[in-house]
Image (cartoon, helix red, strand yellow):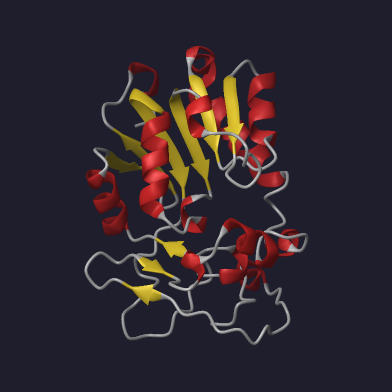
Length: 229
């Protein structure tokens, strides 16, 4: 597909043709789909070509709408239980979600690999709850992501994350026309349920899903989360 294919096309909004072809590869065994060329890029290339000043044109909700909606959802989901939970928003961008949670009494920290480049993971500590909203599909090295999450998660903690599952949307030997497969948005790693389950098992987690786009990695569900998992 063309590099300028974005998720906004699902709303009838199209960017000009870039003339740069992007290919995706599909694993016929597990259903994982990814863009081989883009996953080799360095952070600087992603910043220059994807996460630049024009990114808001292809994902207008990331600045405020999505963080506010996610914060409201978490506050409703955990209510008073959250006050004793250490929370990390992984891939938190500007940190708005964390700011909103703190205003509601949460112990919340934000970390983003692009924003907090001078901050080492071992400086963050460990957390009972890690959220990663719209992160997994952007990550070039999913095994490194899982290693990072494991190092940041307390024993018996939870990882809540969002990414759409590709089941029924990607087929071998057919053109890739799923709206979520959009290189201009940085969507370079696309997961089937089977591939997420394999990733979970390889890292000692069980996978649960609250919806087609909202998922949980856990080893043992803690008492403060039994009502949602």
